[in-house]
Image 1 (cartoon, rainbow, N blue to C red):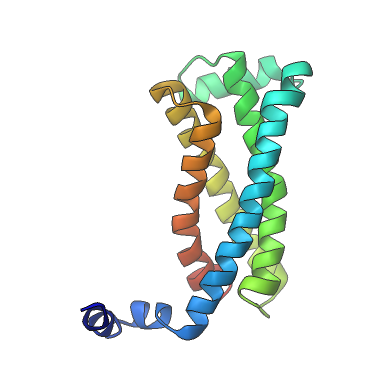
Image 2: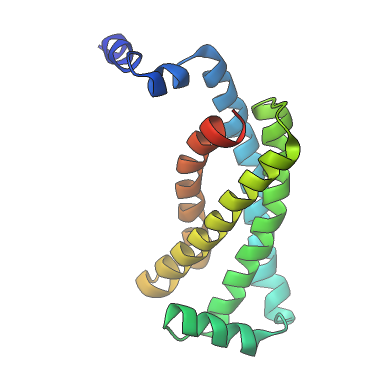
Length: 171
């Protein structure tokens, strides 16, 4: 039954490109890279959110808070700012780890690195905005603890990133 479904999907170019041994190999490496990036990002998120920023609140709270509140039309508590800032720092570090591992190991790309970096940076900005908005929504609006929300949001990002990496950035 699964073989029949796969045969039908292979008739479409998008799926035929995705259902190859090389793609499955890339997917395995992507998952390993993803878990590595996840571990680094989640570790840094928790270190900054629950240790560093508790003892040493990040500077610039008032101006950034005012801009964010105007943009999101919502009032932020200090804890919200803390976990959003921790998310940004962790995401920037994970960006570089993931970019380099995916380029050189997962997808073994030989395309111009500056072109890929530009494309990856656009995706990075989109993902940073999306993860921050989703993190805020799940944590402040729904009431899920930030460390749980972070895991849920990271899972969502993984889903759309593989296809974009395979088809656009590391093709």
